[in-house]
Image: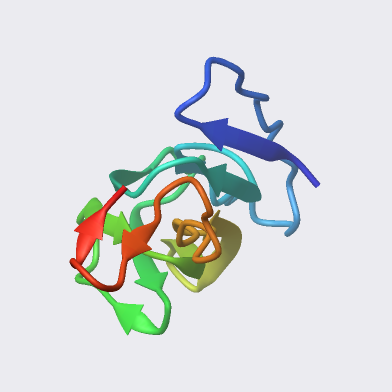
Length: 123
């Protein structure tokens, strides 16, 4: 498993491996099979597939038009990105998982700020 931390300076490249006998290799940009986001963001997904004449993205079950890159907002939770690369009847698929944990609420038991219940003034 290859993990990229978006928003940070480190990135680990993915080496394409041929998974069929016709030479089509699905490869997407940005690379990585598992990506952890440190902030919500839009991601531009593009094909860098090898020996493919056409490609199609499917993100969380939403299918996009053939041969079009996709801008997608990574929301809280897990996002599944699938790229299918084609050349005639031959195809290959690449899948990447994006995760953004979201923001946690502040501690509700914060004792640094107190309210005077008689006056309603925060102290």
